[in-house]
Image (cartoon, rainbow, N blue to C red):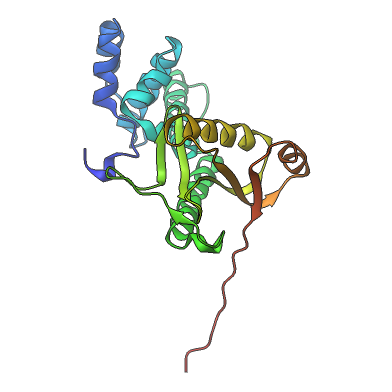
Amino acid sequence: MPQEDQKTFYLREAYAFAISKGLAEKVSEIRGMEIEWDRIYTSSVRRGFMVRLLQEHNLLEEFIEKSWQIGISSFGQSKIRRVLNLASDYENYLAGNSPVGKISSQEEVDSFEFALESHLRDFLAKDLERIEVGLKLYKSEERNGVEFPVEGGRIDILAVDKEGKFVVIELKLSQGRNKVLGQLLYYMGWVDANLSSNPCRGIVIASEISKELSTAVSRAPGVKLCKYKMSFSVEPVQ
């Protein structure tokens, strides 16, 4: 599929997937909806109803894993919340219960933070020695270590240190919290089991590190915490 479509919930694939699970009648109802209201989001409304249908039958995670892996990211989750909100807005519009509002500001924040986190990831991946001397981006015949796919997720950056050992790097645009440690340890375990017999290391990079995360990491050998700082300057043009 075209690269620009990969951030959108795949509606056709969702239809086919749901039909394969015995939901042809429900899919037909959603596809046949005549959506008429004072907003332009007709396809997104259908996406919302399809997400809801898959959720109701405990099929959403399977669909995301098979057909829309960006759905596990923070950006993908914000897309899911957005289309679910649109479906609810449309139902309220039809029922006349409440006026249709704007997309929540939180959705805009989620998308904005995802974009900034992606920029930070790409910036660091091009110059990993900013993190540690001798650190290089992992590369294989199939792909490199940016957004490296594993079962159940994607590693932000997979690198190799000067001794040839793997380093798993997780980025958080805002404050690093406890749950990031569990995610990092899972990725480290996956790398140890699938890519190398030597224990890998892990690094969490965030703008702020919570006290709770620091305490938890103190009991996690091989994990390091780092803070990033961003700055810019303005210079007059002569």
